[in-house]
Amino acid sequence: MVAFVSFSAMVAELQGSLTRRYKVHLPFAAVVALTRTANAVRQDLRSDMTKIFDRPVAYTLNALRTVPATKQNHTAIIAVKNIAAEGSHAQVKFLGPEIVSGPRRHTGVENVLGRAGLLPYGWSMVPGEDAKRDANGNLSAAQTVAILTALKTGLSGGTYTPVRSARVARGIWKKALPIFVVQPGRPGLKPGVYQRSEKNVLSLYRFVRGLPHYRERFPFNSLVGAHAKEHFETELFKSLSESI
Image (cartoon, rainbow, N blue to C red; front, side, top):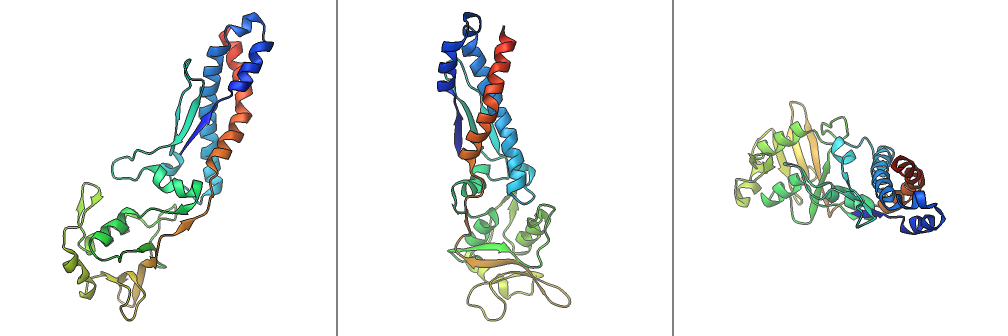
């Protein structure tokens, strides 16, 4: 997801109305103003996220990057990061559906359980009623690790890698483990991941058909355009005054 900040028409119009003293400095001032505008817009978008999303984590709030304008290219760029930090997903993967709408991607846990034969093809996972959540409302990392460890999917270097065959994994649900899987078609509990307790069975994840669809909640391009208009003129005259 990329948005471009460029006010070439405004700069060209201004070029004709400026005195020679200011006109000489306009190209450089425009580059500075565009870059400052992009950085200001990034902060505005960060603030927008806190209003649009429910308790967004720092990784989401830091999802945007900027590319400064240059003398050769009077365009600054604001983009959603598409390179993931180690052990994480690139922000564009989970913000993309919020920007253009559509189904979300499979999560790392879904991929692991799918490869292990525990999550059927065409199904996804949502937190169960008894799942422990962190301050941001997500399933806690500690509980996710406990689930994967109990289901014998394996852990390596922060990446979840199954170490058992699908045939063996499919039989885990029969064993009296504290955490177990119920697949579609089994009698009793609804499909999902559960944990046994002394008195009852706790629902950690529920299996649902298909992938959840997101509606457009974060209108990235229109927000960039609106915020850029708020900042550019002020930044341009500010950089002009600083350059003389």
